[in-house]
Length: 127
Image (tube, rainbow, N blue to C red):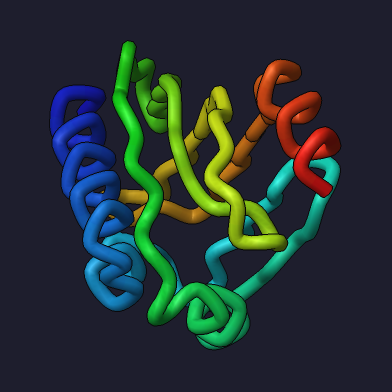
């Protein structure tokens, strides 16, 4: 099961790089729970779709998947990412996403995103 779930997470990551909301949600349960640690929580495809629509028209994040591994109903991936912050300045981040599957669909996603400190200093210096 882990290999199949890992393949699904790879497809999800591809959808994220294209800002393809429906491509991502096609792999999720109707009652998907997404927790952006320290930021926000969203439950249900419709709520998540509305939240993600705020990103439409914005440049999608560019990211690497440095490692991806699965165990049973869980898949974790982590890497580096570049994306624009709320002020429109590009920043570098490290991320870790933990997916929980129910059958062949994602039922829970926990995302941990940390801005690189060097980026924080640059952002405050330009503000």
